[in-house]
Image 1 (tube, rainbow over the protein chains, first blue to last red):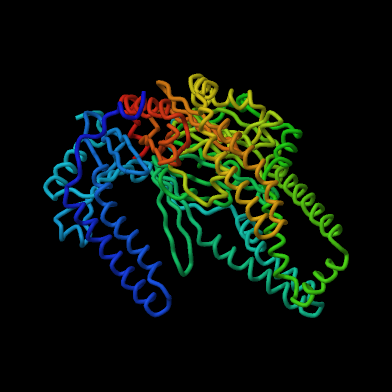
Image 2 (image 1 turned 135 degrees about the vertical axis):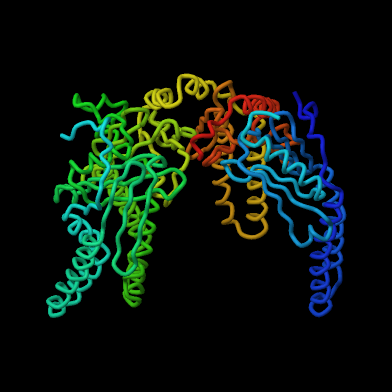
Length: 155
Length: 478
């Protein structure tokens, strides 16, 4: 059996989370690049190094959130929560309902701007799964559904 | 001998005091940190001593007396209530339903004073929820029995035959094969601080004068001393070790000067861990440890508390696994599926890169760098040993994972105790068709990297089907 034959979870996070990641990483990259260029104008002879770094950072910022978003999936199945994520470093997790101790919705300031909520699922072993961004109504729905089935055997 | 109190509740109506010997116990406790002060005063000269010693004694005894006067406890049908303190009063109520075990501690000072210390441990709190530092043996038995809610007192026919013991030879092997050279490093660091600056220079000059051979001899000597100290410590701590099963609990008794008794309730065992460090494995020995939910405390406390069998023959350790988790757990351990040969590839490649880099540097920079080539076969051997150590097995009742070169660790967890299962594939693993399996337990986890991906996926999917069926009993996490 190869990994291709296993189905990935069915649902994607809200597309706005991709925009949020672009914004966040873009802002950080901008600050880094400005500092870098200022420093290089003052200190370095040639613009080669900053140019290379700029190219790398821009690539990462443009491509990274897109790939991350494409690979992040979740599905509330009949008896467990199935989550997978990661492009280079693939990671997939199964959490049976009855192991779930509580579900937490979390909203940072940037999430609020985009109308998103992060969802985290906790078992006795700590945080076991995370969905990085759901629209608020969807997040409520998933959280309620998981809270309803947490500690039970099945839907 | 107190009667079994299955029918009476042994509830107290008023607050009780500890045994007066508590003063002695606490004084002895307090003297330990002050002993350094005593040492300094002794070495610094005569006249100060006469003033210092009574001061030190007063500093230790007076607080102990005050503490004894203020300490009270009461055992009701549902709680153990403890209180104390003069300026900073404290009160603590321990609900008896949360008590996981009651440990009996008889250190040398307790034995000399004819008393016993009880340590009450609860689920989900700090490792020792409450302690009664000095009780007469009869009272300790009464409290202990009542706290454990009417479970039958040990039968007068004596404790059941032990499941495992450690012979003096086992003790020696355990002490000699442990990894406590780190203790030496700490001792050396401390020693360096105590030596005045000028003396240190003088000593290093002296060493340089004597030559490398002497330094080497000194280092070897120091290592031997460290081993001997480690041995001595082990013998003291584990003398008379017995492990027995009483009433659904695994009970460990050990200790020469400090007699200790600790208990592990079987139904709180999350997983067992078989540990075989390289030296012990070569000799055919192994250790057994349990991971228990709800225990918290310092690293060393947990280390000591969770060891079921510090060292024993591999066959005996497997017998114990059967005793704790059942025969199927043992089958899982013996039937582990190994990692494929290609799992060694990344580490071998790293060794190869090291070799090439070393040759380049030796060529271009300094020939002495070629010495690093000696590391390459070591790295290669490590890569091969690492692959051989890996293994996994998931069957209907248990999940078993094994990994580790220096300390080969096999973790076996009953499926109901697995909280979630994870599969990870990094870029290099994807190229080699490998994967990592990771289990989360209520406390702790187990990971094996670089398993064959087909096997890893089948473990993941298999566990995914089993986990919802084999539900965790919710009761013991409340």
